[in-house]
Length: 519
Image (tube, rainbow, N blue to C red; front, side, top):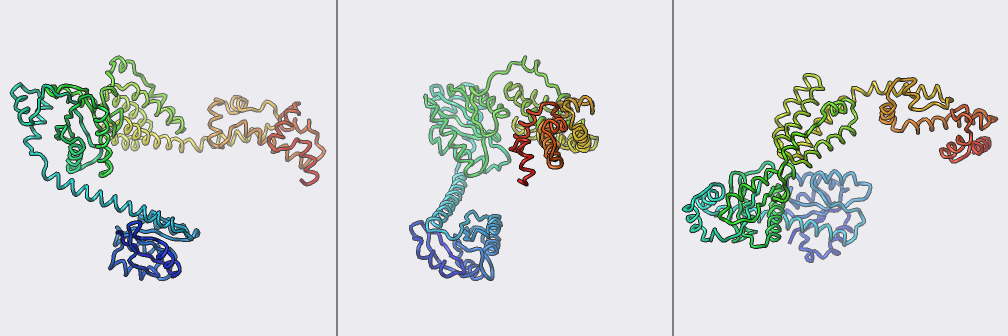
């Protein structure tokens, strides 16, 4: 039974919850109540309940202060907070101290029971995890003798003669010449302790049972498993090993599986699995890699590979991150599709990286140059892309800031030209770019959209309609054809009326009448 305590300054609330909840039915027992945080803290310091149901707003010490104090001194105690809607900000603060359950008043019996049940389940899982890790430590103290494990390493990783084969066969009491097997390698990802590596080995032995031979090879777990046409079951067990280990230690492991072969060819299967493991660079950490997942590399692909790094550098200098990001995705996708030699892939990425950082001033370039070893040591294409992308975004943002003032000046000129030539039917982005600013129209259009948030054509239409409305309000006797000419529609008054209605919901004539009547 998990012990529960109620805290609320309203006696009717405490009495109501105390009586309505069938505590034992959900594996709990109510051990005490309190009317404020001070009284609650004194009680729980002595009795240490597992769960506290508390109101937030109370005299003396409120619920938030109670949560904070308990978190610092009894972090294992879980909270369910009760509060009115207006006090939600307080609840958000309480969540910083691990509170996951926040119930709005008034709340019914089922809501409280559900919250209690979830916490009880979490506490059960925590006990199970602690028990599992404790059992793992106890089991690890009785692992197979080192000599036996060492013999397995020698058998799999080295070339051996017939005498060695007989010795190993007698040691393990198996027929090495008749068994069909697969060799599986597990590699932990990230930073891990030796205890975690041994725990992975123990989990592997527990899930596969008597059907495997298992040892560590450096920082790898190596297993030989019999396969008499039951690979789907083997794969399920491998996935269970990976998922179980992640559940308890929050660490991924990448797994390589060899083809089917005889046990006396274990060395060949070992080299094959190592080759598969090598391709985690492309397939990602946490993958299960088989021979089917990789393909032989056509060396001519590397000779034909070409990338225009200067084009990439021009994109970076433009300061437009959206375009740069698309180019990065395309660049790395080529490597993933080609799966060329890993070191060749790294050399191409480093080449573009060096070209990019040379765009910076000397101090900045040296800063990024010092990060080159990090890039070289990354062990998956996904990690390399993420690192490369983060550095590129920093450099691109720097160029964007450099260009921003210059861009703002250009856009100001565009707006001035529009206002000055609003009555010209030839006014367009192409005309402004070619005749007034002597710029590329496509570039100017992108720049205008980036700075103003709208396309030039939409901006021009909006300005013209706003000008038309201003003229109508100031010149009530203006003719529609005259109005069209004054704002750049020339003699096409019908088209002007269509655009005007689309923008305002009225035709120009209707707008004039409504304007006179004061809408």
